[in-house]
Length: 297
Image (cartoon, rainbow, N blue to C red; front, top):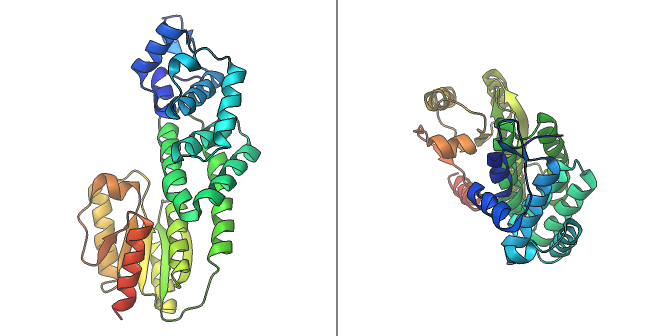
């Protein structure tokens, strides 16, 4: 059984710690356990209850009314809410519940329902990416185990690949090739997979190299394929200067080829970029870059 602090609950549920304390005092909701030194701690079951309360509260139900319900009644209302037209946060929290319960069938059901309702691009940008960032932060702070993080990523990777192959089958296009790769040590593929899907939808031939690619491999692939551009994603924690040095090295090695870059570290560090490097912050931004790249011929 996992143990969570009030700060862990705040991060996972989005409910502020002072609000949790107020609900406890005023309504007797989710009474925590206490350590020998009188510090609050919560269990998996408490976390699931907070996530359910959060879903109902964000959907307009007053906390005073939620407090009158028992756990079974709360669960029933959440199920009925998730069967109605969903908002993004509801889907994220439903996925969180499935992960915490290690319930692959439930996670599949939520994913497939959201895919049908929103389409692949909106699902990934508005639900999966925020979910992954939340899971990543929780994993870094040890609020969830590495096993749960891998449970999620393995399932989502399968869904990504199935959706990409179905909606954007690979095509040959000798004049418009893009190389997608992660630099050495970088293993987080979801951004790379998503934007490779966008490129395939726009008619580009995608050369997908995947994770942790040495520079020499890039040289060999580019020599054979003569691709028009590179795309890389940067999620792992890295020093800003180290990131900028990496980009300068890429520019020296491939002086005339555009690089498209995305990921948490690009957003957080805002590195100084060499000439012909472009930040991709969304599918719509990348589509504009692809149009410009095609016109540049």
